[in-house]
Image (cartoon, rainbow, N blue to C red):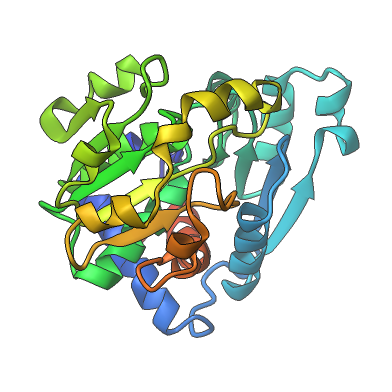
Length: 301
């Protein structure tokens, strides 16, 4: 069987993604009942620090009966200049799948092209597809379906925003992106999303009647030198109680974490009754377990 990678949400069809979310919900209900990955190994390459990604993948592999290996550049030959394709060829002969969390989507694509086993994007400069599986799972659990819902993204048009745009296309919801000029999501991503995504610059307009409001930190890892510039640019883009009142009465709040209270989100929102961030964080475990099963133990036929 030909191996499959999961580098963006476009690597799976809409029906396959919906099946992943259903499987994730099932695995959440019966988290210790299924162990289809006994004897399987996941190599995890971390060039960027992590809490949720590392813990969810390690725990997920353990619960599924497999094993996860943590690899960092300083502990491997990648950190000493070994070509990424050479590392990919070696790991592809020793493990059953590879997860990469790094700064470079193109490097992930190079790795996947040279590797004989599935490669998973655990975060890159352009996308964070595993987080979106968890986010959609969270919304499905709360609303029953995300199809035809409206999600407002408020803040930076970053890797998370790019992924939400692709999710809108794949899962059939509408995304409104409110960001300062110059901080829009990638144009080539938007070009693939048709009328599923609207980009604007007024948070209030994006939030009006929305079913969910989502944000992320104003300065992501690697952008610390831009902190003051970004603080000034995004000052009017905080998700606070006033913005939440513009959303639907049953609207919820999501954030991939870590969060900076008092910056991109008010403490009263993230710690309030509309916040689903803790369920969202937990769902990284269940959504990724569904993904691991799909890639490493696909159904026969």
